[in-house]
Length: 176
Image 1 (cartoon, one colour):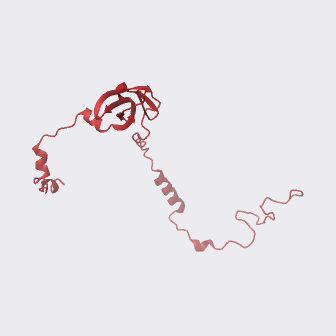
Image 2: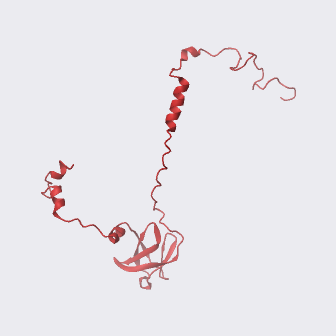
Image 3: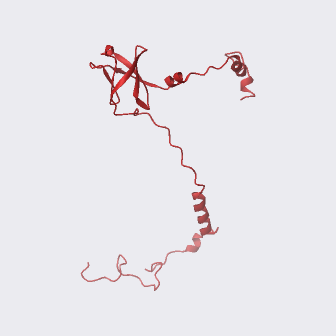
């Protein structure tokens, strides 16, 4: 990008981006202007009692605004400080009367950082254990053969089968 794009003449400006960057001093916005850029706003009609409602919170505003639609400017993470504007002009701050919600319902806090790594590779440990158990031998399905036709269950030492349906042992009288 530095070698090709910044040194090529731009079609609209008729100069290279690198030369254009060096022409003027960069003016950084003030902190107040940056704060203003990230504020949210909503319009509300002022009631007869000179109050406005914003997400279950009540605020008192200038009585001259009764019946008028004003704009409420606020930080979505702090609903206790509300700036009031009427026809684009700042009127002042709204006075909180009843605040039940401190943040805007759609405001999402930054995601929590992931927990610090423990340095233990659990998936690697499971894979190593699996490889150790298989010892590198593939499963030979042909050697498994067909299951026996008799009623012997794997693990029976004496080869005797249980006649009961559930394999509970001998049937007792009066239990069925």
